Amino acid sequence: MAIIWNRVTWYSKLLAVILFLGVFALGFYLGGAYNQAAHPSSVFVMQVGSSTPPASTAVGTSTKPATVPKTSTPTSTPANPNEVRLTAYLTAYTYWDNTPPGSSQISNPIIHTLAGGTGTYQDPITLAVGHSITGGKDTLDYPAGTKFYVPNLRKYFIVEDTCGDGLTPQNGPCHTGYQGHPWLDLWIDGANGTKATSDACANQVTDLHLIIENPGSNYAVTPGPVYNNGCADQYGDTVVSAS
Image 1 (cartoon, rainbow, N blue to C red):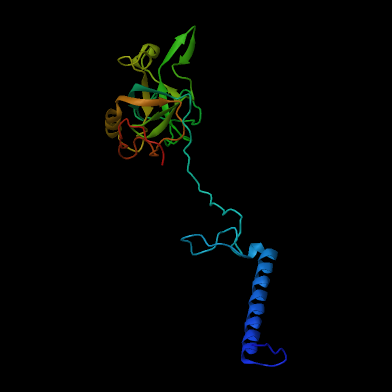
Image 2: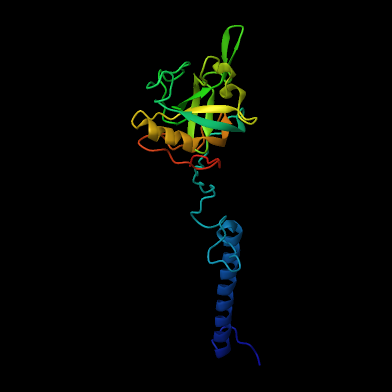
């Protein structure tokens, strides 16, 4: 069959439609390829199992690390590296049997002019120790100002007085010790009680107990005199740090 080029037929119409659709499809394809080549960062691939785009391509996502809130860890005061733990024989003396009796006088005041204290690290209670006399010089067994901590009473003490009695107190048990242990005499006050009640308290705290010489400031304290209208609580020799 001869083709008549200047005549509209049904197959010429069909051919025109096919050419129109083909040109449109080719143009759409070429336009998409050009856009991808010109803007490659605008296309990303979703991570498998993720409902959000990767952080590196998500719009508005900051790459700055999140600020980690600072936490405060309480720290206790470190113990004095020079502290010494030992067992000592603890006795007690009161307002009623001090020298002179009925007084709070002390021989070597450091932070108190009279025997006293509340038992804290800053305000330790007066303590008496033995002494020796050499060449006419009186020397305390522990230097005045030496601090001790007594776990049984949860109180700090400080050397401010001399322990001993009689004509030669330097030869007494406070200096020689008890069964191989040092002897420390604790001031327990008692001025607001009777001699009988304060003596009873002195008897209660008299025994062999753990003590800490040159203690740190980090130990538990129950502040107050050893005797205050009643005897202070006793806790045993377990060392407890302040909370």
